[in-house]
Image 1 (cartoon, rainbow, N blue to C red):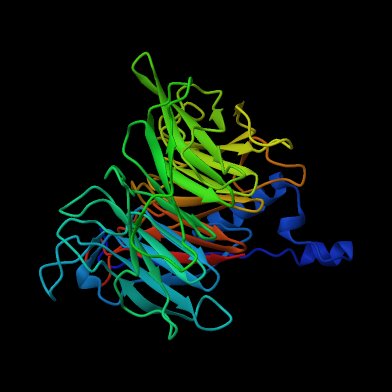
Image 2 (image 1 turned 120 degrees about the horizontal axis):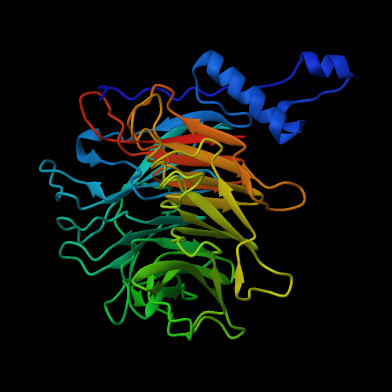
Length: 443
């Protein structure tokens, strides 16, 4: 492996001669999808760079203390407004008073008009830090509040650590509040937040997730407001990642059929009286009974669920993403609206290992992608819905390290508006191996 991470080259393609010939201002983005793909692929091949017809890389984020970091962005990244959060569960070494793998979350703030001017504003840690606690397996942010998960690891009870920005701005700090489950069963490997509500994942069992609603006086140490369970006639039992948007929660779930886990998504809609213990409002199922549907992301009326192990075009573990669109009357038991695949689907790409959705755009990580004959270089694929809505389709853009640096790009992804964040947790920084990076792209 190279001693230094390679830069990700990105090209923005604009048709000038065609615009002049037509007397208009045509761009690649205005052309039919087939034409966009031909132009992007041709220019990419000519320049030996990662093709990208719509997005430009604006920043590469790295920790200021690489000697204490392994896997920057492993499992989780999050963005809201001008603030970006990167989870680092394997933060901490034998020096500087840190516990090995105590975990942390790094906060970056945009200081100018562009993401190119970003600074590391804070490192968030637990006041009760412990060896192998792995704080940062999941991160979420809304406004001035950041939620960070601690799974059932080390000597800590699994919990969600809540950090509220001080009046003077983000700075190195420990938590404002600690959220735990009354039954001690929370896993918190994934956390998600919307408004004043935080949800956290649970271990396999009847409880699918825990809901925490911020008290009127602000976040404080507390147990859950509600438990989301899977004790339904569908027989769901295996579950994992969780996501929330507004009044709707989506949980990756599963059903054992003939000793095979069949993936589904359990959907919970907040009752009129507020969150309370409840079973699913709806269960979403893939038409492919072999799909796993994990992880999940939700925004508005769209739920995206990855299936990194899917066989696509005959390629094992090429992966795909299932898209579910809420009917006009609300969520009901249903199958997917569309399946998203890579135009270059290949063995062990693992498309859908991570997913994020916002508006008409879905981004999916494929950290197992081979580039230039190098395994696990990774890639991130961007899918844009046609004006008529989501249909089976391939990507509109793809990000990757052209020289095949083994960085697992796409291990974690996040999107807000015209900004995408994708982690590459195994890049090297100087003499430090596998420190990792987070890459910021803007449309």
